[in-house]
Image 1 (cartoon, rainbow, N blue to C red):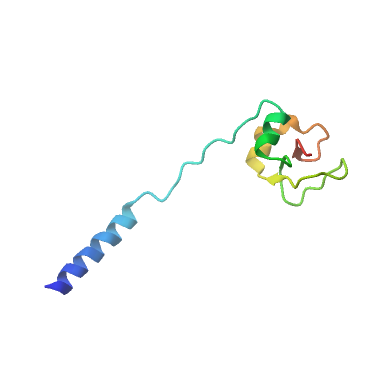
Image 2: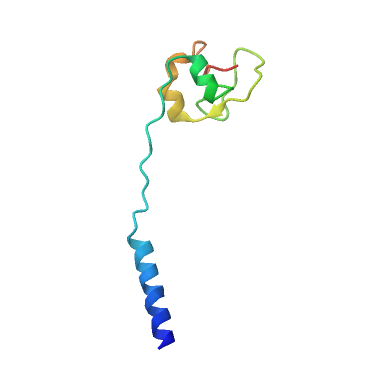
Length: 87
């Protein structure tokens, strides 16, 4: 009787896990009004890729890497080095 109960519970657990939705809805990246607002959240700005090099020279902080966040805030990349609002 105990074996049957354990098997039933295990079967229900496996079924529940396999039926549960595995996809998550990605939120749209936040578009900031200006660099001051962006730098409050991301001190070093936002880079498109991790291999992006800064054209402007030394910076204080390392940029956060996110292609979708960069695309949403691309207009804030004044020197077109694929890092928006670097500091």
